[in-house]
Image (cartoon, rainbow, N blue to C red):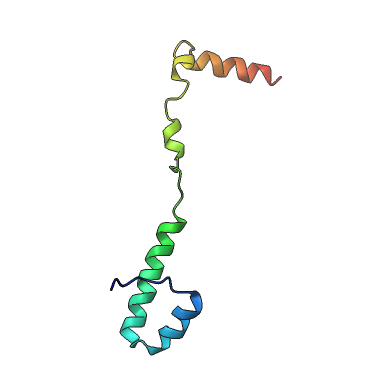
Amino acid sequence: MTAYKTRLTYDDVMATLPTLAPDEQLNVLGALSSLLRKAMQPTSKQHTLLELEGLGSAVWSKIDADEYIRQERDSWN
């Protein structure tokens, strides 16, 4: 005879929890917390502002910074 695992329902779990010892209840809480943390992690990579460092440096490499600032300030008048 083959034993089949059945899927527990929410009601099954809630009915069983009070029958567990307090340390077992804490183990269930820890396991559930771990599952939720994993499920809530973003699926795509999070980016940081630091990844933009150096972006466009080729464009700015041919420009004199002091001259650029002077021209910008002159344009304010």
